[in-house]
Length: 476
Image 1 (tube, rainbow, N blue to C red):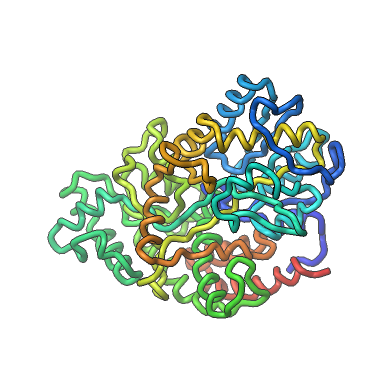
Image 2 (image 1 turned 180 degrees about the horizontal axis):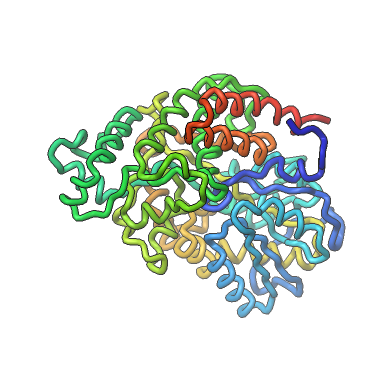
């Protein structure tokens, strides 16, 4: 394993996750705190203000989510036209937020708004995070647990909260339920791993029959489980969350902070779900890491019924410009039933997306930044962009009426919770040296899947790799 080589870069990667958030890295944003100061010291107080008193400063947002790039740039242009305050938006490429943040923070004109994903990232960037306790942003937060507290300050405030599970094509699935010999008669009967697998197995074995009966273009039950860099985070992060969550729960430790050693108690369940994804798909198991597969397109074009991903996909799947055949009425989301506590399990709910404000920016830029963020969450233009254009679910008390989420996946999550189901915490936020740990897991998973390796190698990468990376991440 790696030791203290390139220690600065190791810190940079320490809390970066794919994420998640989702539709891009699907994970935390972190990086080296070694960038130079671009202005006043870190003792600036959080202020705030409306667009009308934004002052003479400027704003620089380093955006975490590639799929929201256009909406953020349009919103920035609107704000500038209204106030005269310059707002720059730079969006990091898929999987590159950590390195982009490190690079940009070292510049003389560094971002004034950046994203951190968890407490580890807050620690990494502690010298650069302004205390947001007195900001309008924090005051409007509906659930104060959706803020990162570190070193006695509010280091980050969630800009959205997200859920993920198994997206499904409701129209095709309901059509299947009406066919002779279907293993279920209603989508509501899918409430356990065993039932989900039985349905997926049956659909995958009857693709031609289903297409003839329903006039569909189905290729397989599940969309391809890509193991390339642009897709593997769905499994080394989001699916890996399931065994981590249930083991942390058994051990009574913090579900988000995790623990130094894991036993892999629920890796048999992980294997069962993964095997289903692979066997009940049209994709060749030997080419999953080729980068030639596009699961989003497969679901969007009606070529697959099931697709593990998150509510951030709603905007892309329902955007007419993308040319997909599915509409909002076709879509729903199921939990990733794991065969552990299926009767009580809801979707995986959390966030890795916390706005942080650069405390080393000049004071006038800090003031302008806080005013801009307040405008984003209180103005009609800002709330419309967040909810209706970006398809996000915002955790602020200003998002009511027309600005409540129209995201059907978030609605499904809320319905499950209102029915007493337990949301699964995002325990993958605890992953140590996340890029290295995930890379090793993906490598072993790829070898297992293409037949060149064994499942024991996956378990080793998962369990021993966790302990090794935890030790590296926490060594003095």
